[in-house]
Image (cartoon, rainbow, N blue to C red; front, side):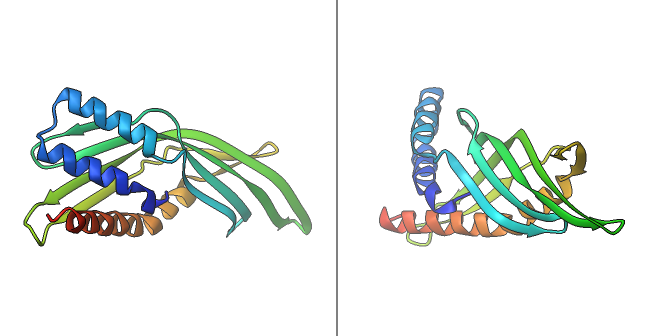
Length: 177
């Protein structure tokens, strides 16, 4: 997920909190997010893993959903994950090279808790990306990839959250908050 492209999202979250989000406001936020959220949210190419290499692309699958309560501003975005790659292993003395692919849909969620205290306003962000039980289909050989994808999310999650928090603080300062 390209975190630097979530700055418009942060601005929308702040704006929503300031005006106490209503259903019309929520609809406006979703329209703005759908327009500004990039189609490709995360991409990796030729990444090595225990079985060979893989390519991974995460696309926005459909429209975002926005909701808020007294503590959080939340955004839920359906994502389509496409993974391709090659298994390149030696098995029983034979070198195996298989082409692989997998496509699945899940829903990522961003929860933002702004702490408005000018000029030291901050925000904490929680990113969650549930990974379903999915397999990589390698010319008939099915390899479970949930552990690999969960590890990827766990590895990147803190970086994504910190970048979003940093972008929000910069935006707060630009707005004098």
